[in-house]
Length: 529
Image (cartoon, rainbow, N blue to C red):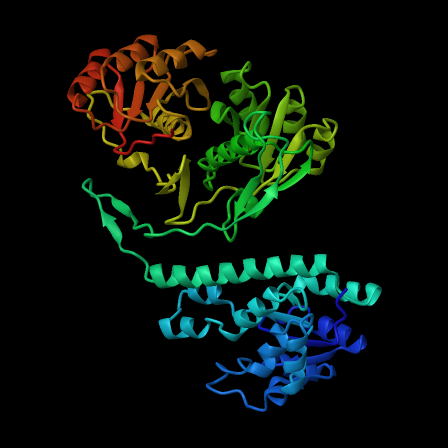
């Protein structure tokens, strides 16, 4: 057990400082401090000794040098278990320091500021702070280090109740401290490598390209969930979030239900992202039903119940055990309608009290409250293979049907164009090769993940539970042969959206003209492997 007789407190973030200072003073701990921290403690009536009184030297270089001194670092780094260290402390009249409470200049915030300058950002690179943190963390056998204000109450409580800090507590604080300095140094390295925003890449098609990705990439992950297993019961697993990133872990809350599995999270994320494509200010309520990372039904309507019934009608068999996402707060009527179906997860921006009461009767149903997916310009993602990753810009490019090209003699009318837009949105969230058949309000048939595009066409049609006459279809990539167009048109599809770009585009357009159907070329594919 380590008693604390002397503490060095030097913090940029003053959160909890008064509580820490008064708590230490009450316990009879001598407090050594610097600059603004010392002033604030003194103003609150907490006795404090300035670092300059210990070092015998004033702060210099506008505060760049104040704690970097043998009388400070000797007090932190001395191993009191070694007689020669104790002897040197005594010989040089260096007071041992038992607790170091330090947090650092907010470099990442300063670097991210819109008006950040190079000189201003450089000034936010902390030197003395990380040095003291690392020194104290290295010497955790003799010193406790605190970098997070949320740990102040824990430290004070232990000192009050036990008279000191155990080795287990000190080791945990040291681990947190080294993780903190690791992140801090990595943020500085990233800024030096990529501080100036890279210019967009010119692409052959004339479209604005993504910014250049960094030559090296740092990932910092922290564990947020220990599911019972990974994708299968024989695979042990943990779920991690990227520190500092947004995404689903940036704001979701589980309101009820069993623990989440990885497969639940994967499907909930897919459903949430698809529902966000229908999140415009004039968009109707939309319900998305996902199974195994693919939509098996999407519907929109004047109410959430109408949208749900339309989504369910697409494939009621596959909807058993599904994940549902909606683009509106769940109301009592939707909750009552969904209660008739076995659902694994529901994710929504909010839930009305009546919905929580009705869905609460299904104790195992996982309810997630999660903000709508809203990608930031330039945001990118990682895809993994063994031993490597793909870094790529998120596929969140906006689509404007008004800009689509129509090379066929038949042109889509307003209702068909609205249906094509609907189909195109669902198609971009469906695994390749993807064919999605819809009407204006709901999916009718979905063919996903097939090796042959014409097989995806056939599956989409075979799955259809609703009338195919007058429907439209979307294909996530071009048709390599006319057989896909022939198959769709013969079944009753009257308009098709596809990217174009095949060497057989003329043949494909001619096939559409033979059938008298409209075809639009979006100019952008949406593979999703």
